[in-house]
Picture 1 (cartoon, helix red, strand yellow):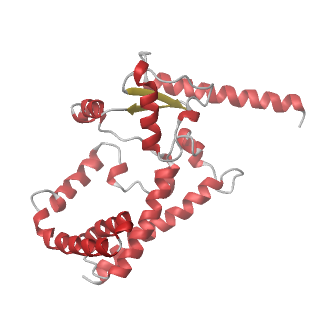
Picture 2 (tube, helix red, strand yellow):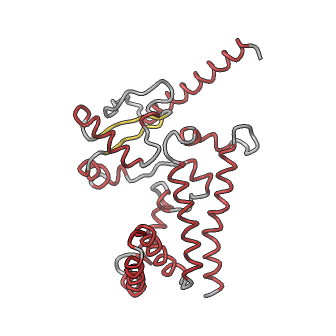
Picture 3 (cartoon, helix red, strand yellow):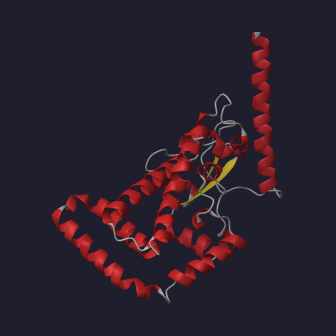
Length: 266
């Protein structure tokens, strides 16, 4: 391919990306109201260099402290046209997420959640009819009016946790994870086989950690441009899709196998 054609193609792609970003901004903010203050970003990619890739809670706290003197406790970032509002204090979180919960109760749509088959999870659903139905069922079986019936299981797992901590106190987080996992699996499925339950807990833990790492802004381009999730898995550059398809199969197994076991033992 001639250099002039490569250059023309590159410029066309850049302009197309810029146009998509501008369109998304106008769609979300038709009145052109000013955004909260934040660090200046780069053309096209925005604030991708300011997004912490590891230990994001520490990275965002550092970012808020860095700009606290001039920008206050709210910092606005933009990555490939996707706005990110960082709340740097409990006061801001309560003001927006508690006092105005009706306005801000919705959840972002993650393309990676689609690719990994996590759309069934209530914590990832957008606020709407299906979410309200699931919340109603959740309250029916796990609400504060019925949770007392599970106290015996919680007390047993509490004692197990204390014994493990006495023997291996340095493995605190590991023991805590297993205690919560065992409690959930016993309540949800009636499982008593600790070894079998632990293997399911470990697999679910790996999937959750993979998901939380994958949705970090800037990690995968499909997060900023969800249309990329529709490209065929054999297409050049679509290795991410094959990766998430494999994870989706593991996720299905982690969800379906305990359910099938519970049905057989019912």
